[in-house]
Length: 212
Image (cartoon, rainbow, N blue to C red; front, top):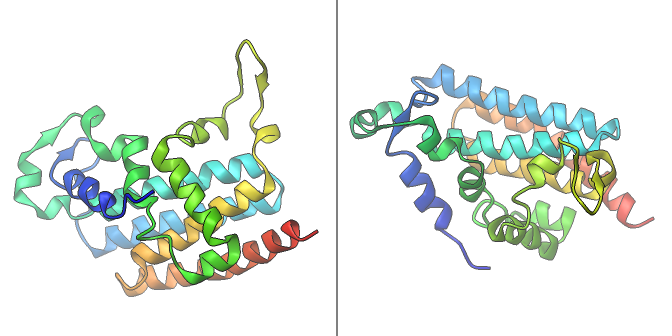
C-alpha cells in the first residue's frame, strides 16, 4: 500500500498555479474563515449521522476531505509570484479534481494517530486509505448522494451507505482536519478542538455498534 509521501508531491504541484476558481487565500482572516467552513461541514455531517442520514453524512465527510485539500495545498498560491503567473483553466486545476484532492489528503502520513486506530482498528483505517488510493472508492461521493439505475439494479444512497461507513468517514474527517490545521492559527486550533468532542462521541457509537 505504500504511497507514503505521494500526497506531498501532488500538493506541491497543485500549489504551483492558480485558476479563476481558486487563487489561494490572501490573509489570516480568509484562512480562518476557510477552516471554520470546514469544521462547520463536520458539524453538519455529525448532525446528519445522529439523524440516521448516513449517506448524506458520508457525502459531507468526503466534502471535508476535498475542502481540506484545497486549503492544505492551495492556501499559499496567492503569495507565490510563480503560481500567480501560471494561470490554468478551472478544469485543469488539480484542486477542482475530485481524485487529486482525495490523493492529497487520504494518506497514512495524516491518518495514523493512535485515537483513530483505537476507534476503527489499524487494519480498517489502512483498508479505507487503500480503497481511495486504488480507486475502489472513486465513486463513493456520487453513490452517497445520487440515485441511479443500471441494467442490474436500482441504487438508492440511503440503502447503500451503512452506519459504520458513515461513522468511519466522520472519524477520518475529524482526524484529518486536526492533523492538517491544528496549531496553524489560534482560531483554527479552537475550531479543531470543538470537533474532538464529536470524534469521541462517534467513536463510542461505532464501538457500541460493532460490539452488539
